[in-house]
Length: 458
Image 1 (cartoon, rainbow, N blue to C red):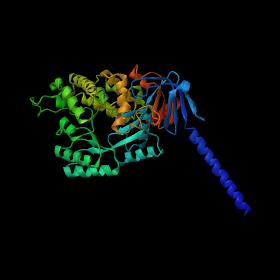
Image 2: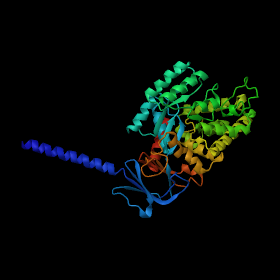
Image 3: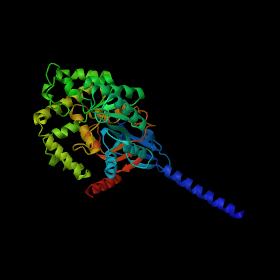
Image 4: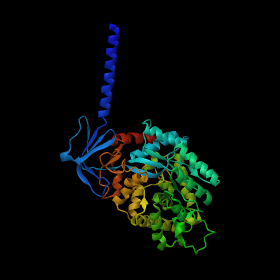
């Protein structure tokens, strides 16, 4: 009997020890960022010298530092002279598949290292659903993933009946959206009807037969790359049947009627369709800078050699196409910038995306490049930040969770060393990142980036 009592006592002590450790571990998740300049993204303002409190992955306080009380056992982070913004969303990203798992995990961290805390993965399969769940369960470190299913091509959905089956299959499998590709008009119509019926959004490209107006009328949730806008801007009176539209309209760019841009913007607003411009996708291919020089950019050291070789080959090959000559590509870049400005000013919904890793777009890094291009298109730094923070939250219908810095929101945050409202390139001065409350300081970010650089070499 005495031995049983001793055993129970020891067992109780062990349980108590584990409980204390668990409590200590929980307490260690409390962070207090003091004297920081908060850019809340609720409105265009800076809350100077504020204290931000993070507990259990949530923001629990945003108050003037002079009035703030720090919770016990909190880890204090000096924010003096720094700025804090919500985490960014890459609305047109890609995560490598199961054939290259290490590359995929490296890509996930490249996003994090650049303050990208959410990624809409715009082409995937069941492997990406597994990644999404592993991240949610804490088994893998990565941004929150919204996963699109396999590409809706003629091969995947050759008939309306096949499209309906595939829509239902992807919904049942757990995908968050359907990725549009090259299907015929009748098949697209059945796809759209089924998608609306069972409640799964569809976005991405627009099939040639459907066109811009057809996609808007069908309720496509997002148009990526400004697909089919050039074709819409070509007057119906011009004969284009024997001409290829080229790379997102490059083959028809000299036929565009710019006076029709406002009409395109108004139709987009009326439909409530989102646009993800991916300006960098076109501008990197259109630039006269040689591909061999582009792969020497500092961030390219995180990309495998064979991927870089493919990018160089694609750019060199594409520049030889008749419909992608310097004059046409320059006009295409200018038009896309005009579209960005007109759509924004008209009230169309725009979300930030760069299409990484594609054509010299290194995950995470390319989103900062995209923001600079959007400023060149005429948006202010604040307006650009809205497209990467608050707007995606409304796209995903989760504004109560993310997108702004307010008590109750998930702690997806970026601590910067300079003011991004003065210069959008200051979003690259990252001192630390919070991902669902997990703290990555500059030292830990650099350590993991060094490992990725080594993985590429190996």
